[in-house]
Image 1 (cartoon, rainbow, N blue to C red):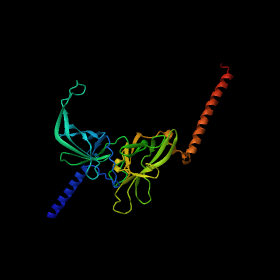
Image 2: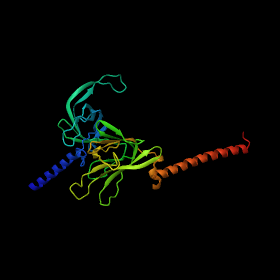
Image 3: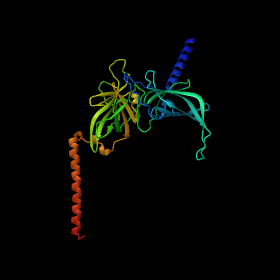
Image 4: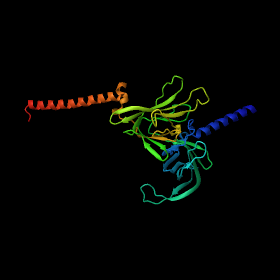
Length: 346
């Protein structure tokens, strides 16, 4: 009987620990970030714990100053919102790039919707909030001495897929047009030496690697208006799959930047749906920003036969199409003029 009670207690304790752990939110780690010193700012927008939908945060960072709101519920279950603001501080704990501490404030006495304006009164709640940012898109938040919650940005404009079971990270569909900027150090920004700043990144591809491993890959093309497009690099997120203890470690690498043949590390939590950040050991930081969700079908040269991807062939085809339409235009004009003369139209 004693053993039965002990087993029951252990089962209940295990289930409770699993429930508490599940409530903390996703766990995202970087296994190839050693030596990286870049500190990209957190993503602006809505943040939440996807395992506790129904409450969350709005975070906005401008030049190192964070202003945010928490939307949730009080002890009675009624909705509340509170405000916090202050400067981000460089993190000192392992893996933390930015840390934030602030008192919470609420407001009262304001006017209702469509009523004459009444200035609200600021009231300090006596509560405090601490947010540790580990990546652009991953943070841990704690209010007072409560349980730590793991947060990610709320993404709803593009698809997210849990492609690799080794991580809780959701890989975004990056397909669309992007601009890329490379900072050789924190004081100097260089635009790539291209006549156009537009790149096309593909949707995530999961090829069969032949060894049973799974990877998530994105291909990058450089677009030079009006019609030229050629492959310049790719992003690969994968596990080593070498039979060692690190088979559960997912790493992301950007190849082909900042110059052909080079590689940069993308901390997995810095790969966002609308912005990503890559770094190298020399302190360089590459930032990608999405400017268009998808490329116009008119520019989808990748859908043509492969031989057309050669710029010479593309130029020949486009020249033929142009000359064809010119010839068609003059033929129609000539035919219309002859028809008019034949029926005596002046």
